[in-house]
Each structure stands twice: as structure tokens, then as C-alpha cells.
Image (cartoon, helix red, strand yellow):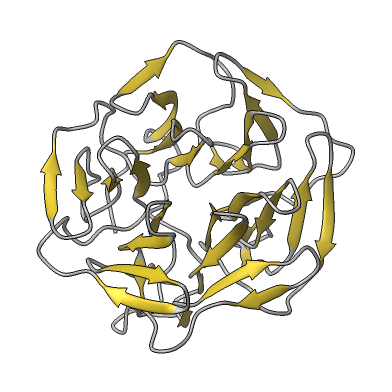
Length: 317
């Protein structure tokens, strides 16, 4: 069961660099901290005003580490409890309950890993398992979570190369509830997502979808479609934009009122490009500055600034 292009045993492609977005451009930070990794989970904890990172795939396997970034330095946390090691879990801050919520991902086992369906929360000090799962939304590798207004929204994910999800859910503190209606986007794992506060919509681009020509444990097919969820209704974005991309990142550019998609895997080599969707059309932007990669962790704070960490530049699909 694979969650993305897997680096070779020498791990030449793993990245451990830290980048910050100030609302206009990206800057590399001269900071040491977590080891190099891809498909880690990252969220901005608005209550404690720090970014929180969990897990990811390192040279030693999947991680169960928790790290925080305060704007200038990384700090390793030492929680009493913690989720099992995993990569490609969904994670975001829940404004209503003032905790960071983590869901699913590829949980490490003796083989390639098993998609998880568990829910955990981080209160700034320790992790708490709220739901062992796998109730709804079900076991999922590569779901995306994002702070959306006064709630947290989960979108997508997949169960190996068998079932891919295109639905949206919100967390009520104890249970998950479906918030969208069919028809919905084709199912996908690890899409690029952002929250557009100007019209309270969820932006989705790309990801990995079902690959009919491959087996159960194969990687999915990179997708090149964009979608917007407003209320319970999905709308497909029109026009020509980025190539089909899996494991890309997205941020909301408040100054220009647009969604930006950057990096990712268009196959067979990763991208160093950025594209913008302004609500009507796509435009290609200048390269953001970091080297080509897929599977980087990214998140935005309450002011629209952003943090990006790691990823991998290993080729192959």
C-alpha cells in the first residue's frame, strides 16, 4: 500500500528545509529542526500561535514526532500520548474547539502501511485520541483537513488503489458529519486545498485518483481538475491551468484574492512551479523559489502567512 512516490533506500530525495510566505513571497529560513521527511502533517495552532507538525516519512520510517514552529525556531514537543507513526494524515486547527485535529493517514505497520480512520486532537501540550475509528468518514490515506471559517473541513483521501473519496466532512468535537451533496468531484488522495475566506469556499486542485490499469497496491493517477465547494454545492473550475498534479500544495493569497497551487508531482519528475486561480481564470506565476518537490507540508496562519517544510525531489510515479 503506497502513499506516494517512494524514495529509494538511500533516501536521496528527502528535504528538510523550512520556507515562510510573508504574503508576497517565499523565504528560506536558516533554522535547524525536524529531520528530512515527506508527507508530514502541518497546521497553525491559532490558540497558541505556533505551527504544529506531526509525523511524515523519514529515512528511518514513518515518524510519530510532534514539532512546533514559533516563527523563528523549531522545537521538539514531548507529549505523554501521541498517535502511532504515520504519513499523509490530514491535520488542521479547529477554531470552534480550539484544538488541532488529526485524521487518518498511512499508519506504519510491518508492510507498507495501513490507512487509518482514527481522530486525534492536540491541545498544545498532549495528544488525545477522540475516536479510534473506523466509523465515518472511514479509513483514509491522504485526506486533506483545513481550517474553514469557524470549523475544520476534511476532504478526500483514498483506501489503497481501490476506493477514492471526493466528499467533504466537518468535525463537531465528538463526531464527523458530511457537509456536501452529490454530485461531487471524482475521488482523490493528497489534493492541494485552500480556504477562500472572500466567499467562504473550499478550493481543491489535483491529487491522485483511481488507476484502473494498476493493482491494489499501486499509486494512483495524477489528476488535473479543480473544484470549489460553496455551502454544500460543488462547482468544477473552468479553463486551462496547471498540469495534472499529485502531492502539491495550495495557499490563499489574500493580497491578490486568489488561490495559489505550487510544487507537486506532475510525473515523472516533481515541479518547482506555481499557478494562480483568481476565481475566473488560471495564470502561471514566477517560480516560488524552492527546488522542485512533492509531498511538502504546508499551512497558513490567521493572517494568511504560511509555512512549508520538507518534501522529496525523488522522480517516479
